[in-house]
Image 1 (cartoon, helix red, strand yellow):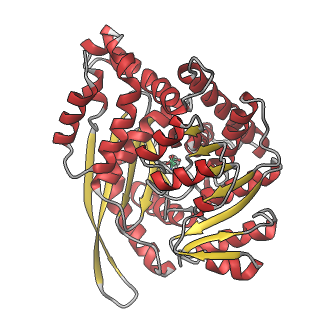
Image 2: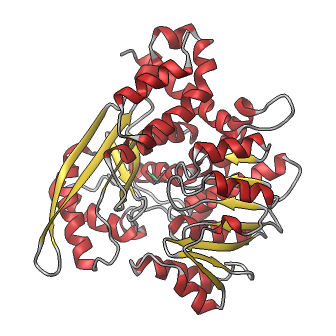
Image 3: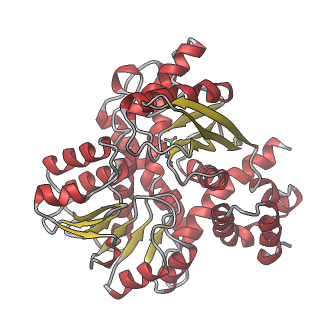
Length: 445
Ligand code: 2IT
């Protein structure tokens, strides 16, 4: 019999100085501990101890030259967490906040997320504390080349398939893939999120944002409601926020906020025209990491240094970074009558925020369920690469839609409570955990 406190004490001891990893483990283990205690096979196979230990965590030196001729050093990482279900799969994050613990928590989360997609992918994550902010294109190219010169040793189309994340978009994937091909001399599509002309998949750039809206659509239908007509707060302004704004509009809802490190924009008319969407992409590509110019350009309001969670909305979608929505924010949203919080960034809410929302019986969807559309379409990109063909946008989009529906179904299966409330955290964690745990039992140790 496992006791949550005892188990967590050991996890804390072993992973001292990695609070995000401990937070992520706590969330999963508190959801699945009863399931484990009821299953002698899981106990005998020591699944709980084994599932919180990464297969390996690699770190390496990345040396590059800036435009002024200074040599710079960053640290690169790849955490290969669990490959019970398939090749390690997960993004690369280039952001100043990246540490070994960040990488480990993201790779851990990715393992269960990837299990939920129904596609054969294990969990991994990588990146660097390199910040693209203010960097020229040439500097980014030199950094990516140096980063891949080390990373290529550890990846491969059937072993570990990285993709983008914060700070890594189509441009960076291009530079990284270019260097991989130069070294390895092959075209097997070892990265996903590639350009359309060289092995990429239609709908991959949109997939995370579209997927989270499809998930919300399923959730609202289950509650006898509809996404059409809803007012939505989104944080962030990158690729994920962009896809979310586009799909929300297509489904008849209105995104009224986006945000950056400088504050948030309130656009009462909605981020709902092709011109505004194109401008978001332009803002992101500028590497300045600010959203104020959007407000100036479109005559929207800008609130410096504030978070968008103070705006009264029906639905909130954190789309920026971990722990961006805390207890006070959750209380504000609850007070303003929010119907659901759909975590679209990885672990975007603190455990205190998520617990407060669930206690208030407000639907709270964890990132590993809501944002799985991104990695799901990466999985579809792998399939297309393996078959040496391209699917149409309709084909990819319809698969994405059905994957998001199946994730929602799984959340209901394991998360529906006696009073009808769906605990999406519990549902997603149990569903993902069982898939990985069963495979680990069957594969031996
Ligand atoms: O967090 C994520 O799921 C991603 N950054 C996407 C990973 C992927 O392999 O497409």
